[in-house]
Amino acid sequence: MGLNELWFALLGVLLTGYAILDGFDLGVGILHLVAREDKERRVMLNSIGPLWDGNEVWLVTFGGALFAAFPECYATTFSAFYTPFIILLFALIFRAVSLEFRSKIDSPTWRSLWDVAFWLSSAVATLLFGVAVGNAMLGLPIGADKEFQGTLLDLLRPYSLLVGLLTVSLFAMHGANYLLLKTDGALRDRIYMWAWHSFGVFLVLYVLTTIFTLVKIPHATANLNKYPVGWLIVVLNVLAITNIPRALFMHKPFYAFISSACTIAALNFLFGAALFPNLLVSSLNPEWNLTIYNAASSPKTLGIMAIIAALGMPFVLAYTSVVYWTFRGKVEIGKFGY
Image (cartoon, rainbow, N blue to C red; front, side, top):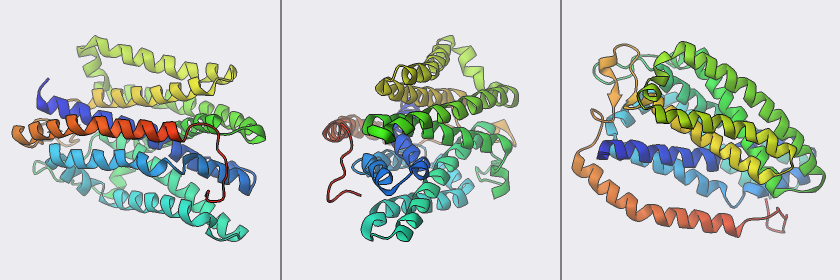
């Protein structure tokens, strides 16, 4: 494996880590309004309170790694998704503000306002992530100068919106499975119902997206046909999905959460496999695709980055493990909680 392939794989690891970790707290935000009373919403907020900002570090690291390893892809991506990225930025900011400001004033109107803001920003951010993935699969109108030649409407295609909705349902299901680990009592009983409903919606959208992908993007399975061992990930993906209702039925939420995390990881792998060796596909001319070779930094830069990553990743993983271990167990609302 060369440095170009190594950094493509590392970007996949960072994206997968972000999708799994921030995926459940985005999912908690998507489910936020289904709570019946203020105490339940506070429990949901406190379940992710110590973790959400650390989870978003994975997204920041992904962006930094993309900029350093594949700067031309970074530039083209930001020119293509400039408006959606601004909306995404506002959504992520409002999530943080909603978490911090909601309980500052003991007023039902004040808290309801921030509850809606938290729910809306979580749903919009998740939808935009999915739309970006859908557009990457379809390809973008990129010219020979590596510049985006379309408009905002070119990004709002049926397939991209379908992938966006699939992502919303996936994160909602993942968030419900996480909440089953952090809650108890009547709230936990209702969360079981939410987990079943979100799984049902996800399953329908997953089947539709799979059919649409095979029909609309036939080259998506080209690398799997070239390297048949990749089909094992497809099998593992299906097994992970089918294990979610089994774990819920057996009242084993930890297995359900691990299964939804494995589902996210498998889908990210299949997304990367569908693109490789491309980073961005030009819908105008395949010769104008941005690949891990023509959009990469110099070998020296990639090599230095690999050394930094080898030194830094163990610390990141250790810190993440310590934080999650420290805040394990059921949620308790204290004096200084959200």
